[in-house]
Amino acid sequence: MEVAHEDIANDHQSEWPQLPLVRRCQSSLVEQIVQEVTRLVQKNQLPLGSKMPSVRQFAKCNAVSTFTVVESYERLITLGLLISRRGSGYFVSKPAAHPTPVATANTCNLTTVLDALSPDLYSGVSTALPVGSGWLPPEWYGDDILLDALKQSMRIPTQRLRGYGNPLGFPSLRQHLATQLSQELFSVDAEQILLTHGATHGFDLILRTLCKPGDAVFVENPGYSNLLSLIRHHGCIPIGIRRDENGLDVEGLLEKAILHQPKIMFVNTVLQNPLGTSLSQTHAHRLLALAEQFDFWLIEDDIYRELCSRPEPSLAAMDGLRRVIRVGSFSKTLSPTLRVGSVCASHSLIGELLRVKMLAGLTTSEINERAVLHAISSRLYRRMLEKLKRQLDTSRNSTLDVLQEVGMTPLAEPRGGMFISAGWKNSNLNASEITKQALQAGIILAPNEFFSADTHTYPWFRFNIAYGNSDQLRHFLAGVQHG
Image (cartoon, rainbow, N blue to C red; front, top):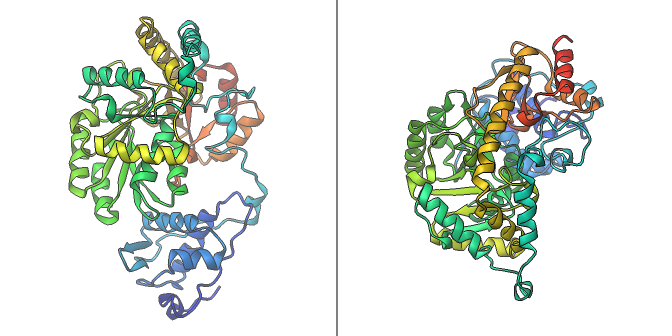
């Protein structure tokens, strides 16, 4: 495909040539666009300084969504091939140094058997071993507490069935949370707490309230799998900030903040998903300082704190809810079926979030919220949490033994929680193909691509430690290792 530099540089005078994109291919449209633009740069058909077409023009010419184009441009920026100039557009910043493999017809014969939003990862009804799931076995929670709470919640006064319930959420639960947080972390009152259908609902409300299409949103890389899809769905641009065994890459964050001027950043402070690590006090302070310097919101995903065996930093406590919004949930300590989460923020911001919550779905379930209140008010709840943490510690050690036995190396040493991420270093195995083979063997895995948009040099997976000490998993992974 020959493309004249003059035609590309002036995208208002001629139409951008259509790229040879293949639908229904294992390589996504984003990957294909990145590969084709990289090829054009390598062949000098897009010289240094060439202006790329606008997002809308590129989307129209290639019959793809603007979201696809935004993500493609963002990946090309990450690769260093493009730069974004506010108010001017996107430009080629430097030639590509090394060729990027282009998808061949053979890759299109493979089907994607599982993705980060696959129902099998969330329904709990599949017969496959849910090693890649985000929930613990129901029996680990303590049946008596949960069943009793559900029975108590059904004794709702008749008059409470006449309306939709309090838009902010069940007042007694909000007051209980306010009291608990004030005693343990930071001062907050019940009017600063908005109840949601779980943490992801809270993230959605925050994106709807604070962001508009085209805004840069920082996320941890790797990070929570659903978040990338949710950010893109809102037309925002997710930009990964590296997180590894050493913590958050604050120097990289500084560089990207200068370049992209983010609107918000999501950060999993404690027992991060998928690494299982916690931010150090030093990194937490530097993160708050950068948020202040570049004027962006910090969304603290704090749903794993009750699974901690030691005190860990709290951004909300350090900041006082000035530019931090804390999101909590009971999915990990009670049951994901209850779908009850919370958002803590300043009084003025809670009012905006409440308006958006009502526009999107009015109120949340008071019956579920009553069940949560009964459960966490029980004198047995703290005892159950301690038992749960002991079970997790035992299972973590067993899972680490299994992974070591089959030659897998953890990405980081987890400080607690539910997950270990590990892979085969110095391996040319394909994570997607292994995931497909695992599914055929009755095992659900969560590969690295669920948690990061980056290309990885070796395959790794997030393991739910509740299912890690399984002979079925051990035999499968040993077979993969020995090929």
